[in-house]
Figure (tube, one colour):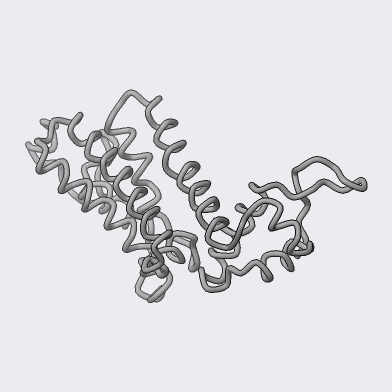
Length: 212
């Protein structure tokens, strides 16, 4: 599958940039796993020779590092920066955890990377991503008045629910919920991220609920 580059034109055709190669690498990993990422496979996918690759990277490891840095920046650093513009901590939690309540794809980049966590490059990036996301979730829970131990526990619980859902979609999709709206209500309530005024259908508000 040839892909047009975004670099300067050469012989009336745009060239491939390092970012083009990195983006294609992420797509290939998501579709076929880390083991499928080779210079040869990626060059064939992009419809170019390997010479174009070596113009930008010394080898596969350097490409993988660049691709994962790109994913980390977009999926975590930029996402957190955007969320920081939301002043209400509960709303930030709702927006972050919304992904943990939606039907996931049977194959995702995160699940593919989790399978390859023994790779030292992948492991380092997954650790940084998980740490940054959990730290941000914890900060939001602290803003809602939770003490540090409870805020950390909630943050880990929330992130584990997200990770677990991705794994189930890959390993045992038949066990996933069929009623995603009910699942979302249960998860958001358990994580303390349900918007004010909303509650699970059929559940009466307690005095404690009314006081929060």
